[in-house]
Length: 236
Image 1: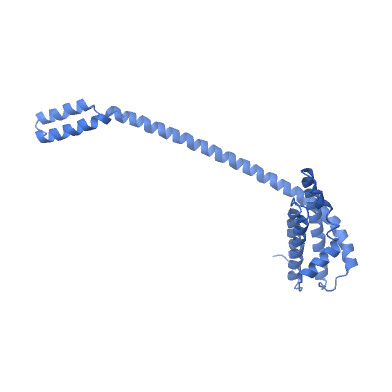
Image 2: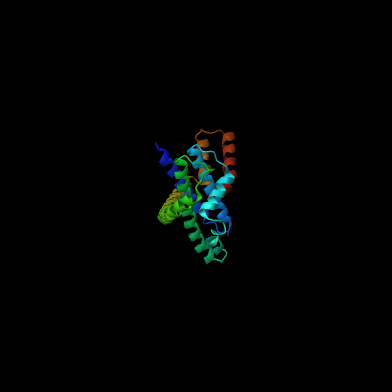
C-alpha cells in the first residue's frame, strides 16, 4: 500500500505524463490551455490528498504566478503555427516543457501542503526558487519518460505487426483448408455421380423387377415415369 509521499508522487507523475501529452496538441494556445487544465486538476488532487480546501481560481492563479504567465509559456506553442516542421518541433518542445513544469508545480505544492500550508499562505519567492530547481529536474525526467514512451510505442508497434502477420498466416491457412475441403467435396460428387446408373440402366432394372414379379405393372409405370422425368437433370 502506498504511503502519503508515494501517493503524492504518483499524482504528480501521472499528471506529468498527461501534461506531456497535452503539450503535443498541434493547435497553438490550445495546448497551453490543456496543460494548465491538467496542472489545476493535479493541484486539486494534491489538496484533497492532504485534506486542504481547494479553490480552482486561486489554484490557477498560483500556478501562473509560480510557473510564469501564459505569455511567457507561449514560445514553444506559437512555433506550431509554422507549417509542418513547426508542429513537430513545437510539439516536442512544448511536451517536454509541459511535463517539466507540471512536475515542478506538483512538487512545490506537495512540499507546501505537507508542511501544513494552504492556498492562502504560499510564499511566492520561496515557491519560485523551488520551482526553478524542480523544473530542471523535471526536464531530465521528461526526457527519460519521452524515451520510455518511444520504446513503449515501438514495442506496441512490433506487437501489432506480429499480430497482423499471425492473423494473415491463420487466414491463409483457413483459405487453404477451405480450398482442400471444396476439392474433396467436388471429388466426392464426381465419385457419387459415377456410381449412379443411367436412366436406361434404371429402366432396364425395373423392367427386370417387373418380369421377375417384384413389381406390378402399375408400380412399374409409376417408377418409369419418375425415371424419365428425372433423366433431364442427370449429369448436371
